[in-house]
Image 1 (spheres, one colour):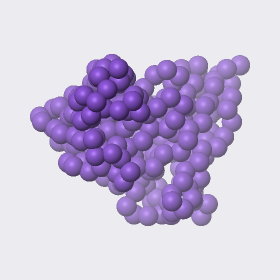
Image 2: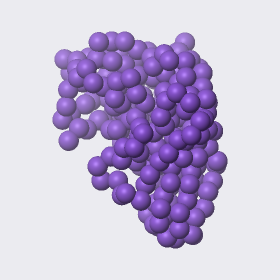
Image 3: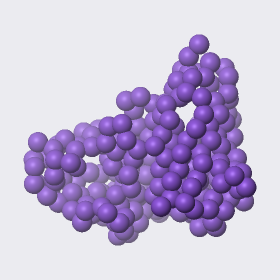
Image 4: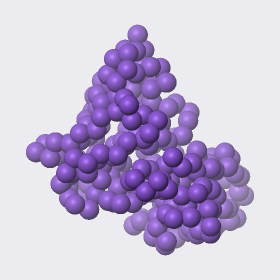
Length: 109
Length: 120
């Protein structure tokens, strides 16, 4: 099955822009979805597909993809954006399997 | 507003079977647009996809867990369930149920999660 690789930790100064990346072979075929998880809470979908942000998610969250790498960008990071971020996608096997990345801990300084 | 709620024992003995149910409210589990899945998260670690089910009963499992996992659906009760057998301490985790669009991987609605501890 496929794997998705994320940097374990990233930091950003308050109000600056940060990009969180996700790499894997499945991303050459399928779009990534992105989730934000705060301590003690369930993950929340923040971006999916080519260009889809769920209702209620601030427009400072955006995403892009190139080759085997997907990226989540937060433009003007806020203190409340400090959280763990996970990517996932369909598995490249094409058998309706799903794979998650290992997660990135975002610290807002 | 769609809601998902996990239920089941919070403590399971090693070698026994973990059983959880997810009750869906505010929407029908029989919708052809969605799959219903289980994801778990060991304490302090990342998310791991366990598997998912379509309302018709078609199932898809993580290859690493496939030999121990069964996911089933009860459309009459608007519920789907997870059974994981021969559990060990490594199966201790918060277990989430969630919905995703059929033929995709984006999980748009999640339950709050339930901690299952494997211990004697």
